[in-house]
Structure formats: structure tokens, C-alpha cells
Image (cartoon, each protein chain N blue to C red):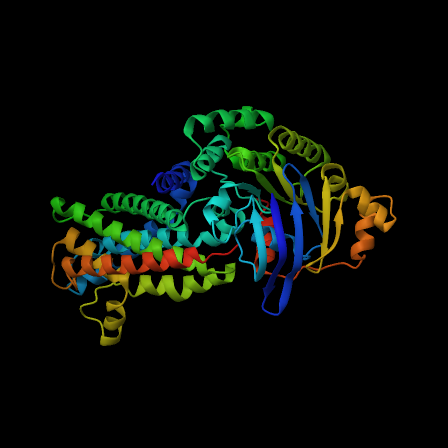
Length: 261
Length: 252
């Protein structure tokens, strides 16, 4: 479903993604792990047509996103690291707008919106403005929106960041349910190793833009001779702390946190 | 087309839902109108120029439309990192349609703000000379809104961080306002200011509104409605293409 060959991306003299290759099968849940600044978000941006690769090839459902950009975009849904909902509109309106943007026929959209809002337990709050939602509700709404146009692939970039364990568990349960029912391929990144261990069928670990491990959680633990995925992760990437360089987005994120949006 | 419409509709919904913001953004123009209009009025009258409030009102309406449209365009920067814009940028839709819907939406919002300020002006004593010419005045308001929403989109797409916002405000938007002749007549100023004024797009918008609302009064109108409209349409096309180009280059 996703195929990546020798993918590279450089920013000036800095190599963010360095010759990465992997393949994700249909209906698979694939976790893409790495410390801060390892190249996860850059890879997701390239997979989702937001950034052009410096070199290398990508196929999404057999399509080259560089060539068939609009068609490729229709085949996936994405939940970004930073929120991308319209706080002044209601939950239902956010989904309706998405349906128009993705050419979902009106009647089909109506049914799909209802069933997704019910699954993600937002149906009762559908007419409330999104800015009055809690953090967990917003995330659920974004994930529901990602599924709305029945994509073949769903990208989740740190979807559980800042959520309490209850919300995280519930969120993964719902994602898993949709993955099983609709055979959606899920490509996720997270910093919570226990989540990746429980949810993902296969895992890739990258560090400094290079792939360092690929396999099922059990295989990775066995290879590194560790008991938990967290230990395996630390033994693969070292325990040195990575400080993300202060790019404009990071600076704005800090600013946004001050305002507690 | 459905996409342009729904993005435009979104801007309308947001506008009508944030009443507090709607009222708050009236504060500045009302202050200018009342403080300058009534404060400078006697001096203006003694200089033999007539009623200052009449002269000032189109300028304040133009200012309102300018600020409102440039700001919503520049809100792009915030919107693409933490807002809804990102959702539209990965959607299977040409960027041009997204840009068009958004720009039309902010231009309409700016128009509404302009109309609200017009009402305030009329309440303060401003009177259009000829009611039949009011639609022409509104047309000029719309042209100002389109020109500067497009400019806002062009700048907002190119900005990388919030510092750039301050820069644009101080070195572009405020000069555009102060050099436009919104606050003082340009027929008597020196040659340097006259040249700067002639390259300021807002000058043509305000001049056009004055032609329409005050009649062709010598000393208050500089270019005349025909030239004003021609220049504004040309600049609008230029800025719209610039906006479309820089919007298509956004990487997030």
C-alpha cells in the first residue's frame, strides 16, 4: 500500500531523511518511531505530498504522489501533529466541509458523518463549536475526519500527544476497530513505546534520518535482547537527549502553548 | 466552484459568530473618526477647506477595509501551522481554488466591516452628497477589499514567523494608510508626497470613494473615478496573481 525506496531529503547541508526504504502492506498498522528530530515528520510530509523529496521514490496505493498529486491525496487521510480544526465551526460542520473538499457525495457523507461521530462518541456534541471541545474530543474529531472519505491509508502524526491514558486507550481502540472493519492501512508516529508495542503490527525505528530497525515488536525486542520496546528503542538510538533545533514552527508551538489554545 | 463557495461560507460563519471581535475591531476606526474628525475639524474649516468630517469619513472607511483585509490574509501564517488551512492544503483540490475561496471570504468580511463603519460615519454626521452615487462608493470599497486581501494572501504565504508580521505592519501597511491621503488632502502637499501617493493603491480607492460620495469637489479629489477604477482593477489582477503564486508555493 505504501512503498518507499531510497528516500532522501536535505535542507541545505542538513540531511533530514537519509536513504530510507520500507514497505507497508494493506490493512497493516505501521509505527514509525524515532527520537525528536529523527526525520519522522519530514517523512510524513513527503508521503503526504506536502514536501518534495530530494531523491528517491514513493508509491501510495500504486500512485506516485509527485505525478498524480490530487489522486494520491484522495487515497489518504491525515491527522497532523498540530491541530487543524476550525474552532469557530461545530464538529459536524468541520466534517461537512471535509466531505466537500474530498468530493464525498452528499448523501453518503451524511451517513458516514453520523456513524463516525457515533463511533468516536461525539454525536451528542456535534452542534457545539469545536473550541469548546476538550483536547481528547478534538483529537477524536480529527481522526474521525481523517476516516471520513474512506481513505486507503491513514497517517497519524503523534495523535496522542498530551492526552490522558483513558483518552489514549479509547482512541487506539477506535482506530483499531476501523482498521479491522475497513482494512485501512495506518501509518503512525508516537513517542509512547507501550502504544506502539500494543497497536502496531510492524515497527520501523529511524535515527538521524537513517533506518536502524524494521520488524514486528517481538522481532525488535528479540534482536536487541530487551524485554520492553522502550528498552529496545533506547538501545537502538542511545540515551543521549536530542534537542530539536528552533525552527519557526517550534517557536510558534511554544507561543501557542502560552496561549493554551 | 463548490469548494470556493464552501470556503467563502466558512469565513462568513466565522465572522457572524465572533460578534465580540466584530465590535472590537470597530474601536480603532471609530476613535480615528471621532478624535480626528471633531478634533481637527475646526482647524480644517479655518483653513478654508470646509467640513473635515465629510472629507475624513471615506478615508476611515478605506482604512477599516485595508486593515481588515490585510490582517485576515496575514492570518494565513498562524492558520497553516495551528489552524484549518493545513487541512485544505492536503485536500485533493487545486491550490488556486483554495486561495480564491479564502481571499474572497476575507474580502467580503472586510467589506462588511467597511459597511459597519459607514453606518457609524453616518451616525456621526457624515452625509453622501448624492445618494444615487452610493453604490459606486460601495464598488470602490469592494475593490479596496479585493486588492488588499490578495496582498495579504501573498504576504501571509511568504512569511515564516511572527516577526515578519510586525515588519509588514510597520513598513508596509501603515505607510500605505498614511500616504493614501485618507487623513489629509493631497492637492496642496509637496512633490515627494505626491509621488508616493500616486504609487499607493489605497490612494486610488479612497479617491474613488470621495469622488462617489462627495461629488467631484476640487481640492478633495485627485485622480477622478475613472482613473481610480482602472488602476484598482489592474492592481487587483496583479496582486491576485501574486497571491495565487505565493500560495501555491506554501510548504508546511
